[in-house]
Image (cartoon, rainbow, N blue to C red):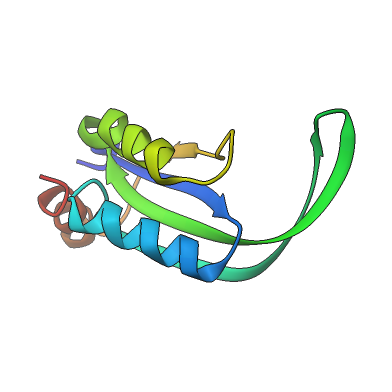
Length: 106
C-alpha cells in the first residue's frame, strides 16, 4: 500500500494562489490533502540570473495512479512558466492514513 502513495512538493508565489490550486487538486481527488507552508525564502537560477523570492511551499499527498492527472492540472493552474513538482515515494507510514490517501484519490 505504501508504494502507491506519493508526497508531491510544489511552490507558489503567494498564499492565495497556493490555496486556490490546492483546493482544486483536492476537490478533484487528485490529492487527498495539501499542507501549506508560507514564508519560504527561495534562491534560484532563472534565465541566467540568480533570483530570490518569497514563496509558499505545499506538500500534497497523492498516488502513483493519479500523478499524471495531478501534474496536468497543476501545470494548467500554476502561474509559473516552469512549476516545481518533486515527488517522493512513501516507503512506510500509518496503514490507516495511507489507505485514507488512496481512498481520497479515486
